[in-house]
Amino acid sequence: MQNSLPWTGAAPITCLIKRSEVLKKSWVLRWKPVCGSTDIELSRWLKQKPLSVNNPRAFLTGRQSHGRGQRGRIWDSPLGGVWLSAAMTCDVSVKSAGLFGLAVAVALSNRLERSLIPVQIKWPNDLLVNGKKIAGLLPRVFSRGQEANFLSLGIGLNVCNHVPKGGISLLKCSGKKNISTLKWSLEVLLAIEQAKMLLLDPKHLCKEGEKFLWAKQIKKSQSNEIWDVEGLDLDGKLRVSRGFIKENWNRWE
Image 1 (cartoon, rainbow, N blue to C red):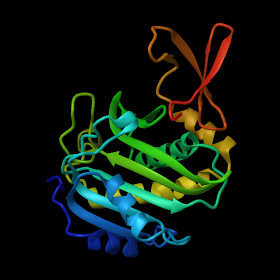
Image 2 (tube, helix red, strand yellow; image 1 turned 30 degrees about the vertical axis):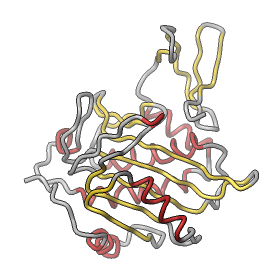
Image 3 (cartoon, rainbow, N blue to C red; image 1 turned 60 degrees about the vertical axis):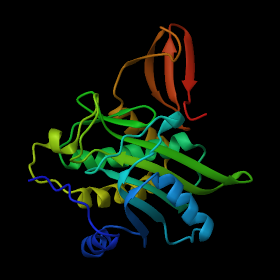
Image 4 (tube, helix red, strand yellow; image 1 turned 180 degrees about the horizontal axis):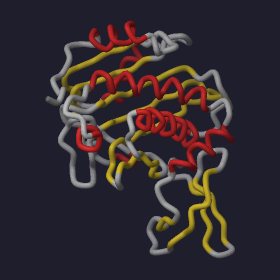
């Protein structure tokens, strides 16, 4: 039987974190059964009480009614998925939101691979299984002067929820009858922590990201031109070529 029932408050995941002892940081969590947007809720929370160095935060919900993704697109977030926004102080050098997003994508892909999920990264912000979207993320880097001040991330993972056309859930692709949103909420938090470690070595991060890339060719936005995918640069941009022309694309700009 699938485990899609909502858990009350942040207490269950807090207990799971303490039992598992896998997280390195002392996360501060809030949870609502339904909210308009976890990103808005997190922003309000940060205004009320600024971040501390050792205590990253995450706001989780059972369901979002007005979730938004890249470029303001609707983020379908029904009951049964992991929907959260997180923030943490930045104690590593982060050149771009694209590189931070890549780090989270690689870290979460590694967590999914451990569960034998054949995941790919559709640059810049989606994870795919069998060509269908299983997760999406929206990274931000907030700077003070020339230095990154803190990192923020919105993330959604289809676990056992109804998915729209072009989507897939862990319940569907794992072949398991019993799958827990609680367990995968912890996996997402763990991936966010591990992403920070990946940022320490951008060259290694990009090599890891290239292993997960979903395609060898890509169509350029607003044109019918087909470009070859060459890899990733140290800012998380996609390196592409068309004949003798080479470009680095960044869709977060």
